[in-house]
Image (cartoon, rainbow, N blue to C red):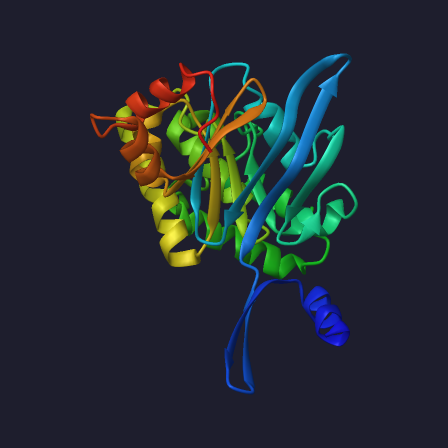
Length: 280
């Protein structure tokens, strides 16, 4: 049994199902498919508790919405997940790699747009991405340039790649930001308010791009947004926080069924946030 336990730990196996029949034992190993794991996360600034004992998981293939009112701690959480700030305590792992203790390897599996993507406006979209691709020291320059062309094609900017970014619409800049996030072939992409300022057509294009990348490339998404109707259309899972505390996590359908008579995520969100108790 001790040998078996050591084997389980070394393979990072999430759970074992043991089926017994007479004297035979059948062991089925199921490898972990968790892409983002936040465990007992805390962030204090002075005496103020910004994030309090926050725990949740995002699994492979999820499009997970991250919701909460203004000041709930969403951006702080995302900045910790992306390694921009350190937590006071707790663990964050990306594809099994600890973001605090093993930041470099953890970020290899992560793409992110935190707030608005920033590019050189008088440089073409292609040139911006080519410069960013240079940061991947483990990839030959030829491969870097090929990757730039690949992601431009994926996000639908190949025809405008030679144009200066200052001529791009906000929606095109967001797509260029997603292209940037895809340069390192991430397993999970973090998007912080990606649809802010987009017109209806821009939101539709962004929504379709996220769904396409999820279905064809198998990319997992973790999306913070106030646009609940948009999230309802793309997210299969939700994480809700209030004042830095986890209020609810589960599937989108479960939340709407439990907390809304209208079938709308917006109503479910309002109902939950006006309660005082956690319903997880």
